[in-house]
Image: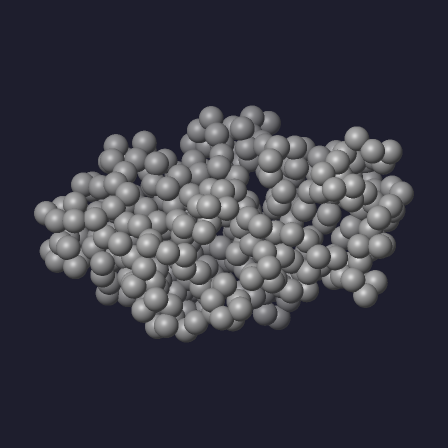
Length: 361
């Protein structure tokens, strides 16, 4: 994935001319990454965009690779590959496209789409105003996204047998995915849907609708549309305090509009819980995480007597979070039918039974 990190030089005086003095050991740049740090991975490409009223042209002055993700410090170490102190590294056309991508105020981290061109009425890859206006259903760009083909999907191993149906909308392909082994090329529709999710993960609220629409289509494929309630997996309190977007809540609200089913926030967390921040970013095993997650999960007694629930999360890897939420719901209502839906399913080897439809022959 490729990110753009925006620096407003008027904030602390960090201008392109000061890049060299900010480098650690002459090769790394520490970027404060207080929100959505769980989106970036080691090896991701990062461009640093400088913006301000100083005597420089707004643009990209640093390019590099994420060398380390310091979860406890809310920072990313960028191994700088190239930088300039006097003029942008990109040409005028690219600089203009990047400026449109980073135009959103009060946001510091952006996903830079591989392809910035979209259909005439669509600005999905930049401001996503057409997505916010919920124009995706008839949009040619949205139709190019590749949904999860259920014929090649295996329900994640921690979730198998724990819900009545599982409906992920799109594949999410991280850098570490086995699909990249052997220098294989991922199909454009898969990459674009994966990019869409990554941008949503970094706080682009407008993308909740195209992802929610994909989730509705996934529910149609499993023939599950009638529910008593839509229940989102809760946002961790520390992320809420940091001002991060409640992604699952936004997806649940979009599905509520699409399905005509009310959202019920009957799950909450009593304290922060993170797979990556625990043990200095090394994380726990799935079983260890599930024990700790279950201990922090609070379930509202309102589940009692509910017959059918749509449990919503933004992404699924092995299914641990959904598994524990489902178990907690059944502790209140043992006979409840639970369908799980996510905007994304990580393209891990276990979940993909046949990768040929996801890669270029």
